Length: 108
Image 1: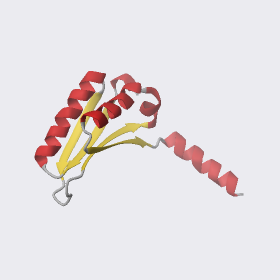
Image 2 (image 1 turned 45 degrees about the horizontal axis):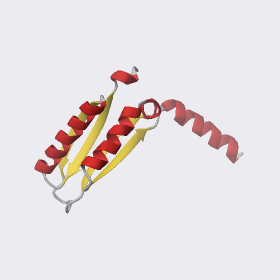
Image 3 (image 1 turned 30 degrees about the horizontal axis):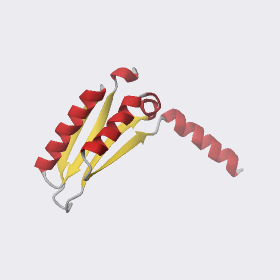
Image 4 (image 1 turned 180 degrees about the horizontal axis):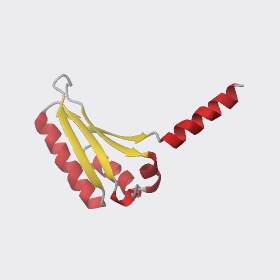
């Protein structure tokens, strides 16, 4: 995969659809500023009292090679101080098989 053209995924949960949409607009603007392609999924969680959550999801390869993705996370935390901003790095198959082999050897 060409990481420079990879898309970062952003999941937003807010107590109202209006708040989720505003966070989505902020996320898209910040992503454009740092040069990151962003796919946003925003939803309202009416059960949530007032917590707003923004999660950026990326591959391990992107996390290791894309400084702009980390800049985006920092920028979002600054522009959305009342929102929990987190980064989820997806496990890669190559890491999973290696860690499984290591565990088997260390247990023996």
